[in-house]
Length: 235
Image (tube, rainbow, N blue to C red; front, side, top):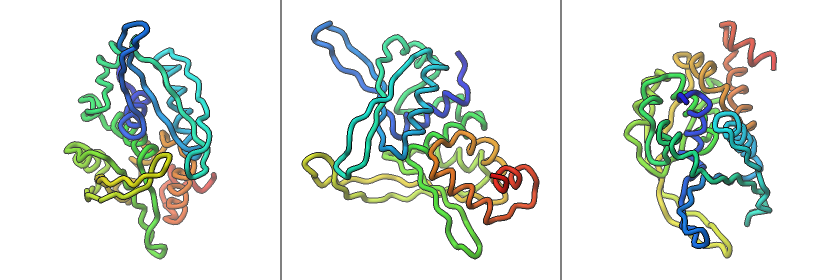
């Protein structure tokens, strides 16, 4: 099995909202490995995409289950599956929560699909300056990756800047205050990278409200060259 764009997207989701963990099964006296992802309803299309990838790329049928409402009253869903039998394939493809496969680092299309997974998982998209619109894409990460900034600049021909943010939030039941930090990776869409983004990143973004903002930005820009204008202005 070769690394492709579908699996690259999956790795992007793993590096944002997904997790791989293991535990000791006392009954069977066996270490079990699992992949898991849980989201609110607005991010459900991302989990449905992961479900499809698991079926088509790894021959694994997995159900998406409801977790009920969270402390904020939002419907939540999760997907979870054992991956013990998939570990040899995961190892071959360098699928790991903690590092980026070298194949993705050296392939533009694979990296862009991976980036779409990050954007779906931990990305925020906003349009600034209505008169002279700019589309800012921000990806939050718990870790300060030395590669992500370099690869965004390399493959999307733009400046990427990183800033550390202190985070205070309420989590759990009962609610408890959590103090921590994260790193935000920021870049803009511009005439230099619009076509690359449209061709290689946009098709893999699954979450509707994020796609809608991107489409709105292209309409505002009123692009004059064919393929992008046709795609967005006709939708």
